[in-house]
Length: 182
Image: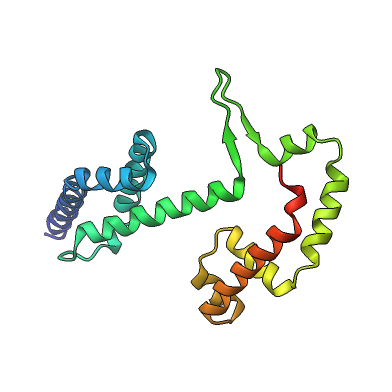
């Protein structure tokens, strides 16, 4: 009797997985439209939808039946998109669209093409270091992809202070580095 009952429970679990998969897949039009809105590119949108499907199915135990599936999938997609954006921003790479499709690091390529790179780098860094450290630290965290709220929490300062420091740092850095613009 125990084996029969165990098999029946396993069959119910499989049905639940199938039903959940169907529930997620039926949101395809909604997800595609949302992905296009976020990425503005059809291929990237397809990748984002696939990543969302994968994460949703991988984490189906976190979904509470009866809750809004669209809202749950939207949150997964938005977080996936933001994480990809932050990762790409940190990597700072671009794709060469010629036939070879090489991945090049912009920072390394710039070093090789400029003969006075080291002297420029030193003078730029001294200009940056002349700005108040609290402004530069806040600005660099924002530059690295942190949200204002995250910066405020990490630094233990009010949100308004974060915004004003970033604004002032940007203004001061633009003023000090105006001679280094191309």
